[in-house]
Image (cartoon, rainbow, N blue to C red; front, side, top):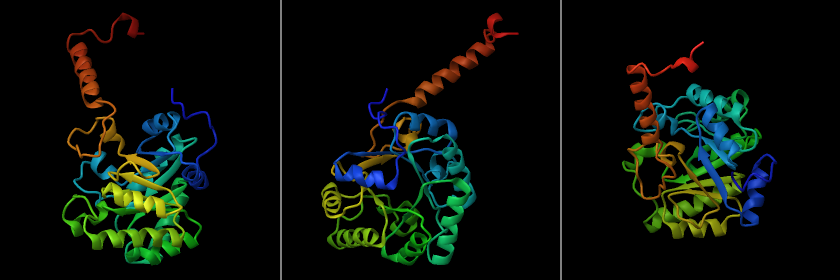
Length: 272
């Protein structure tokens, strides 16, 4: 049983800030359906992210770009019904907030109204400043996302580590400060040098959550399917697998097939 279940209070954006202030690390993991979200919440997770990574691990796409508002709303509704304690954060999908701040706030309001989520996450810095301001003006909490931003993969052309060069690192630092100044409650930093993430974490008062950003940030996030070993095709350096559910599930299914083929299932006790 998790040792982090003693505090039964719901996790809020304010509690995440308090966790940073007292040096308590923040745990964050993705979920996309009711059953898995229920397990993750009961384990004591602080933040559950309904990520647009559902495009990869649930729908089989090679990027996150195909996810629609309707699909993200469906996954978020499933997760929200299961979660009792964790903060539920939902990605706004590609095309729902870039380039048009009026459309951005409409997307964010729709997501919050139809899912009951606690907050939304969007990718980008100064280039989406107007959208951030509009969404925040509607009273909707925002978690930023900088560094490697998967929705911009066609711009980058690669999933390589970002901000190794001085100019990009400086732009990242400036964008982090901008997001804090605008009013974002936290930022995800993806696939950047650990020392740069350490510097940013020390400079900002809001929580910094890392994925491939080293150990010096305020918390960590991983994709559930990767961490549990369900997805075997993705093995980046930053990923630690805590289980091998691919083999566990495969073996269970093979045993079921064998029992059905041999007439062993169902037996007399399993029949009415």
